[in-house]
Image (cartoon, rainbow, N blue to C red; front, side, top):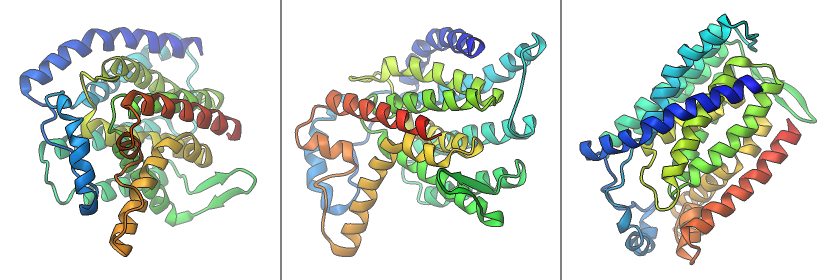
Length: 331
């Protein structure tokens, strides 16, 4: 664990040195938040107009902070990993090392590029199809390259899915990519909860003796911690779709590689709760033409009934910590 903490602290210094120039660079590019919030359904339009009045001060905030984290994690890993190997640090992985790294970084980078394209092309009507296809392809890589075809459930045991596993894995990856993107709506909400989730997965990966994932999480956490300093209310920078899609999908992928499906669903419970509130609203409006909430997702509803933004974020972090403890116990 000492080595992993050293990696985190070393990379933390690099992220701290890079983030302020990066924010200034985004300002110069005018890669900023310009568009008002869009309602999830037509029935929410009036409630969103009221919410938009409280969000005007956020216009002009740079987006695309996820790009910095994706870039530096992808650069630092191939530098630090060989150095640790040459220094005699014991390397162990649950699957063939090269294949495991290929799957992790393909997901991390490809979803980031997909999110970047979505940020640049605001009204891209095929983005849902591309997210589904990319999610399925990542699930297929888990099946073909790593040979994973089953999941383990506590108190039940191992369930084999065979050739249907890519569909299950793809659905889980898509679900978390979408859920994390939906959660990323208030300053510090998504990032803070992801840090909590990754600390839990860090413990799981170290106890599973999966060195590549432990080092990857160390680097990822250092970027997220640095980013959170500038993302808490009022935020100076936001993730953008590039970070939101990449981080949600990669978080789910790590859970699948480590074989911790049940802990993944519990530890990532805040993201799933946000997604559920949105999905329930969509289903209710489309089938019954009736709203369950005045506005969705959940964090906007809490904001609309009078909860200040920092209060929502802090209490979600506390809830996330409790879920992380439950997930660790279950794993």
